Image (cartoon, rainbow, N blue to C red; front, side):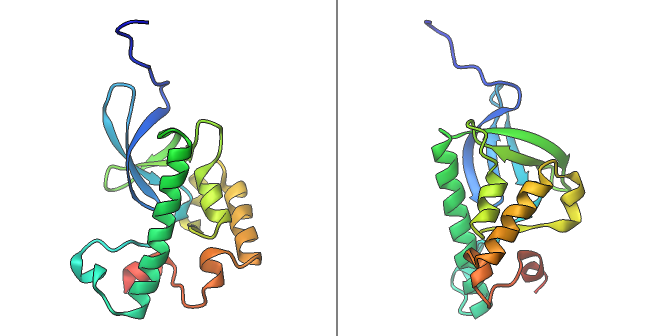
Length: 165
């Protein structure tokens, strides 16, 4: 087919950038960029400023170590999906990001994988808007039981508590 571009389905997006363990930028079929915030979960923070990158505080180092691991794992998953994702948008947050469940083209629920590996925590205040809440909660319970990722780190502070510090 000459001159034809591959068309993306309406809820199919091309990933442009993984910002951290629960945020990314993707473009739709029309080439319009959208910012995506993961529904149902909260990932550890990554350093955003030089001061954070160079921080000697144990709590910062710990948070950022896990944040980078979550970001790297998300990048691997996106790459495995050919840089394509399928979104189920559940809300728009105060920053204009589309709060969404993210699946790879093969149907893999990204939030479930990250929770099962102990790289994100279920964010219960927003769970009611999460179509796959039970699968993600089960994945987190499995990670906790097996002390995977953050669940095996007694010094880890949940991202929502870390942000308040």
